[in-house]
Length: 362
Image (cartoon, rainbow, N blue to C red; front, side, top):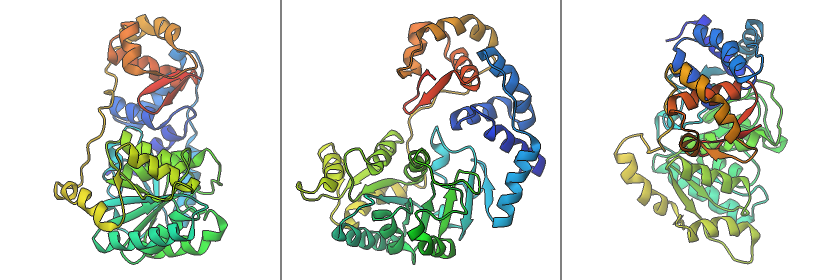
């Protein structure tokens, strides 16, 4: 168990500008202690070409005080209570707040997501499906949005449900789901990676979706347009090596285009809970572990090679994302040194990470 001072310092690292989830994980693996990571941050950023100051201790203390007043628990990825499957994801949240009923995260989860402007039949089916899967021992996880998400939570309140928020853990969004938020808090579990008090913002919800996909053995899409957040969640599930399911719908309904397309691409067609259980039961029999893509390893101490290759890496980077493996091949920079360069440039605000282990100039 980390001491309060060490936990406070990791909050300072995580909340420092330009420290994303992947960078936080690399810093933690490379330096071991928060104090060492805090000391290294300005040095690494300076090598990337910019000055960087870590978040102050008072800011981190204020965050933990606010969370404590709410009764929210702050988790790092190796803390008890952090979703077991999520910690395997390469972009798992550095920090995660949770409130509500404990022990749900010890059970296998299935995600049910779909359209906010859902049809009456879609809502009915999502509620029914959530109930069936809950009775079979699965915890249903979704995003507390209106429509399919809300129906999935309602159908699984009795058996166990987890709502992942795109706001601070103390904010019910959308407002019409405030009563449902209270029911989940009472009977289920709320999760959020955002600071208490963080309002809803469009950019928060795609990030929220990775927590949903990463925490579940599989994701079921009930309704959703081709470019909807539900389809983004399904793609994230595929990236994590998880199962994807689609509920078929009428070709005349635009909300059916997303799941119908997933089924055409190989997703399991779902007409009831049995279709999901048939796929997931063999996986559950092997324990709570799921295959995930191999992530680049934490950078070793290879600063001299990083110094020698930094200019070449910058020359190859552009505003278009490129895979780290491709960057290593073209630059000739050893993988460990390349990860150091990317780490330094990200901390300097010059590089942006993308899904699939890709980076681009920011």
